[in-house]
Length: 163
Image (cartoon, rainbow, N blue to C red):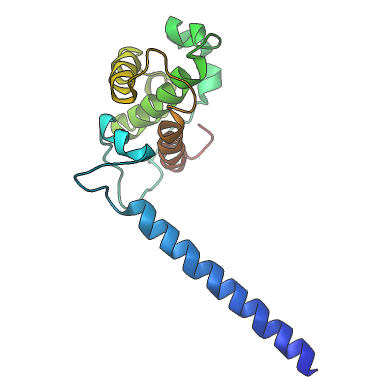
């Protein structure tokens, strides 16, 4: 019986320690980078800021349309970004742009989810300059992809369905 109590106590301690480290990781992730701006995420200042509501609520009356069902409206550049040396990087940027567009326009239909490609071109140019590369790789845009995933979660909550 004493051994079982010890096991439960150890399990509780492990859970508590895990929660503490998770809180520390979240706090560190949300801590802004200072004037020296070193590291992978420093270049995210290139991305436009998105005003995400503090309390994300479903949009009343929103009709959600999944992006994959909007194929006829996809920009030609997106179709071209399915292959090639910068394909993944450009799709990462476009995911960010699409989610940003849905959040800002509060439009869950194809017109909200199919964003203009010009913003992708602008961001890609800025990222190439920031990273000092001629061609972006998926490693260059991994932090952009992470930001996109966060925004997609907000858009899905607002739209009440899959992005």
